[in-house]
Image (tube, rainbow, N blue to C red):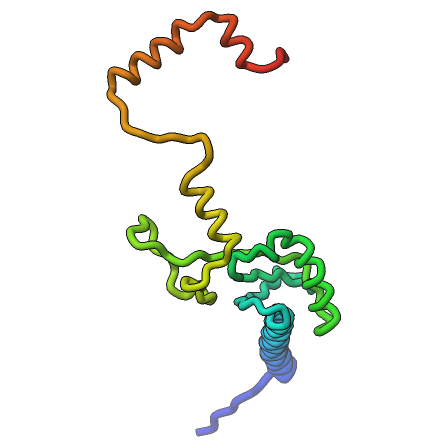
Length: 187
């Protein structure tokens, strides 16, 4: 008994070319992802080095939107007074990254995580990356937190429901002319 096996060389060449193309495509995608990861690492190292020279601890993350050669940097830093004008620091940081790595950072987003409070209704994330300075709190942060706790001219206390209804009734019976003055200029 004879068994004959025939191969169509044209079809075999097309299937081989397709397989080779698929392997090449995935190889290029992997190479591009590796280059992108290295570029992110270089940007993060450059941002960390820049802030290390100024004495600020920072945790940075570089993000690249799909299909672009630009990056977005998200920086977690302590809430310091010297970072109050962060748009100026952002411009200098973008130039520093461009000079150090040759990569373009499009924008920088800032996050200033605070230490979690006891009894807070929402749990703070554990991996904030920036160790808050509890012992030596920044005076700028302390000033802002004190202003939030006790705003000037605001007094809050409990009152009775009858007093609330009386105040509501007085507001409703106010003359119409006084309401028009409160509404602002006519349109």
